[in-house]
Length: 355
Image (cartoon, rainbow, N blue to C red):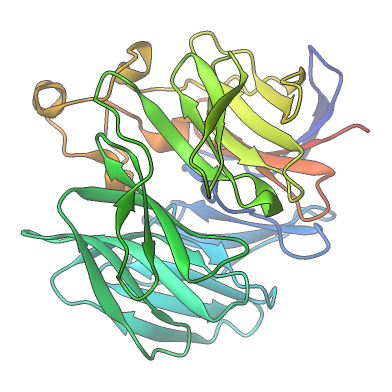
């Protein structure tokens, strides 16, 4: 590993990976740290396809976890047992034990492509976005492989997440607008949480820790909070917060920034006060982040790329995603993982959070 001090804040930063291959932590909706925060898991293309690896933050030693057919590069989620990684690969959901590397198929959905997945806090339930030639929506079922079913939705689905306190609820994003929706795990009660048009660019919604409320960005103008019960929305701060990751208690919101890029920031969820953690110096690619509306069909046609829900590495409208920092907290919230292509290829970084 390469250690250095951030040139703006003096924070201790470690470059965990190096070399010409793309490496990045899991998505901002999931932590990339194993319990104890001494090891981190990440996606790497060093073998020629997207696979999971882990690295020791003490010794720098690395080992490959998955092999074979490529995984979805942003799908990995750590089970509450701290040992099992769940991910999607093609049409299936898979689980692998980090130490024994014993891998098993949880559920397969022939003809579909599965995207990001989420695990309920009790560890029993899973959900993932899916897309096929004619259908979109969610799949949901148990980790043991039972009870799997499809929850259809008429538009592209991304970012499914279980409610942290009420695991019978799943929040998900419809792409493009209106964005925020919820549905019961059994497929009943689909509802839109906020009606808005394509000119109001809501992105990166997630749960505000254990409060059960939602936080989201109205790009690039504001970070907002929604009451899960009343749906009341209030602005936390007017700022260009981009990808957001609340802490466990819902008191702080970690974010990266773009246009302008002011590095990684930590925002107080009550007051909106913020402080800079470090620079990411990522290239932050994607032509549409200069806009304040969603990309529509004509935007993708001009870019000659499909929707980026599968995090297509070649996307030029919203990505490529590996060029975005996507910061996330460590287990004890004293460190943050992020990606940066500051050296020419995307690498995994960890920065220390000062008190």
